[in-house]
Length: 493
Image (cartoon, rainbow, N blue to C red):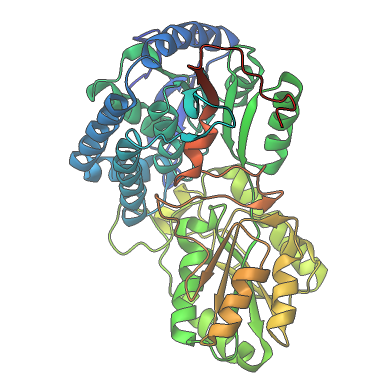
């Protein structure tokens, strides 16, 4: 078994505690990917000291040159795409087609970030006074602490890391403890591309390592993706310490299918949205809102197709649905199946651990569908993060929109309709950061902002152009070449 290390101070080093944890293949718990550092406050302290030195160097590097490093990272990821897809599936479970898509998103983000190195725009505006120049420009902030989850082992770290680096910040990166190998390979690619070693620090570990990063007074910038419960605690700390913070947390996303929809298209959408990544996406379709006219027909179509999905090791051809990430996730999904049944919903499909043959050695759960779900039930309100779909019947689009908006989250939504008027009403009325028309609730593109409203986040966005404003700050400069004292904010009129 390979024992991996942190990357701190420009070197691969063992954790200060000497403790490690096992990275386990969720499709086959007999397969140990490797042993990884269980880091703590001492490791984070060393990482911060190094990152501060790295920041002092990197912030003086021209932004286009910083972008060139990211372009080379993208080229390395292209060359290693198949390898990365395989190793990511081994440690987190989703089928290789999905993990290779994860890598492609990192590639797209790298190439987009490279171009933004030449586009960190400021503004020049006329001064109100004569012979005076006024302008704004972007400056890096400092050391950025990036804490990422397991479900997108490469894409989400690149969403955060690449913009942070192009803007001139140094980075301390703590990958999800269930996917440390992907995090290690990403850092290797950055170093191979020519990133100065002290600009990037890799600190493996569990929540204790993440907390040490958030708590450290010399890390002024935090980006966190994870549960709403943990994000709230991160927010409390960052608010008290006056840190800049981006939170991307939970979702309870709904796909609405109206009577005039293309049902075959909507069926493909909900199968992918609900059961892709085994439902372990913040954008997963966990609610299906069906208009009464097509409810029974569509539910029958869905039940038949979902029953044919093949569970198994994502590295094997023909696998549709991989495992959940660990035993705790299986237990959580089981609890929600029990809750849904007690609430009076009808279990139409699944509801149990998937067993038999190779499935006995992994964390597999059957694709699960509840019908007869009412707005306000816990399975309709709370994030499950597993392959459980709640079906709600409504009479019209107006009721569908109310149900969609009637949860505390607001990440993604989807409406299937042929009516262009209703489509544009949905874009306006649905209280989400993302709305898809005639497409499922998942499928972000790297050059567009990603994020949600309400309990999903704190208003910032990842991806696209907006994220570069999060990872930099505005400075205003005035040049007065009049040769005399001129006073703005004095009544000169």
